[in-house]
Length: 573
Image 1: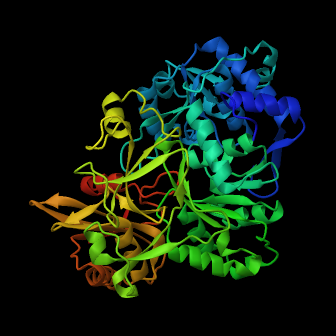
Image 2: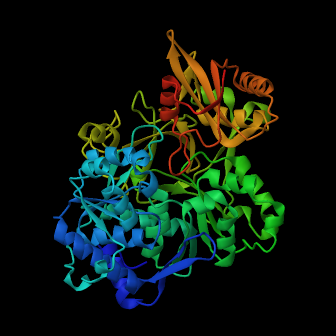
Image 3: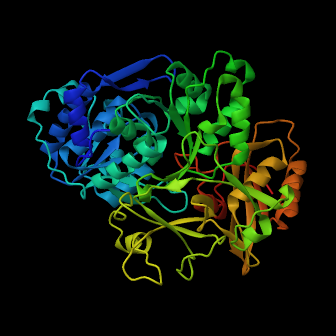
């Protein structure tokens, strides 16, 4: 790590001057052999060129959207925005061949953020210009393709900005797992504080080697995968996330090939490896260098950790490599994490007590649910468990909402003052000064370790009892062999004055599927585990349940699609 500066501009400039020929990023275009790479000096030149161009088209603090695929150009463009002292907005780019179908989400964010410039590539620009109606919807934007040669002609014209830590570096639009996406205002100070926290928690140094497949439009992929290695000064190998999703073995082969020490993703990534990587593909795979396998961004499944450790043990993977963590965009990224080289702790909680928001250990496997620790919070931050109704600190063993304060907590949501006050400026009823970020996540603290139990807004409440959707979802997944792993969403809605339970299930492609038996098994499993009746079950095709870019189930959108009757179903029950 370079001594803390005002921004990443200072850090990259330092590396370009003192480590000009050191490899900064390696990008595997096909996830295997087709590679591009860039040194710190080359990256600084690209960022200065883009920054210089932006300084000609923008004024300080203008918003600039990045509509670029994952790759070295994206990294240079993001840093170019920082170099120009404008506010970057990384977004998934519309597909050039399907712009009309994929532009709607982008237009909603454009309306919210009111950017003046869009950075994109020539193929997308050509597609936009060829369609009059699309071009007119983007007419207020200056569209700049950064893959043209003239973008490298003017690095000398760049004027170094005088950014200060309190200024906004970029807007991180939330994943939308519980609400419509909002632009979190991440300052340079927020970013540097969180990068320092990750470096310390993961014990990263310039000799670390990182492999990342996570999309750069999500906070874990951008901050943890791209900006963290720049901050620490270690080499990172990147690949498009679709290359990983298509063939998960590519991820593990990259770890093996480049002797990576650090890599990870949400829980579903490890499940995908278990589901798709065959025993014969393990030959020659060496995971012994992997000592930080971070797991975060969604509920952590104890069974996944155990099965992954066992399956890949012959390849040198060690269970203590797992580093379970917790974070959210509103806190820049990481909030807590377990200690490196320590097997994550877990607790088996009594189901009945859990329904009453109490974390009580149970010795009976049949009547308990496992919850995995997300580790300890940074010493720079304060974390409290608060009763969301009384706004008072929870007692020991009481589950409440996670509240956070510290230098990593953002200042609020872009252009949403009321939401900012309610989310970022919460106060305990017993205090008048200190303010906290209300995360919307439920959990408890035991011996200094944070355990997350669910989402406040996703909570299913039926007949006065509380149920965590992901617990029911795991039960459903295990009820029948033809249910897709991670392919289940549970929510409730009001019908005739009562809350009723709905289950959405993705089923594996199987012509011999006995649907009557599958539905019976689902209802039986939920009844036996939770004594709950199921109002409705929808069987959907694989991949049709709405998810965020990090793999989280978007429960609010599932509910919306269900009520509107727009699910992509295999059967209607």
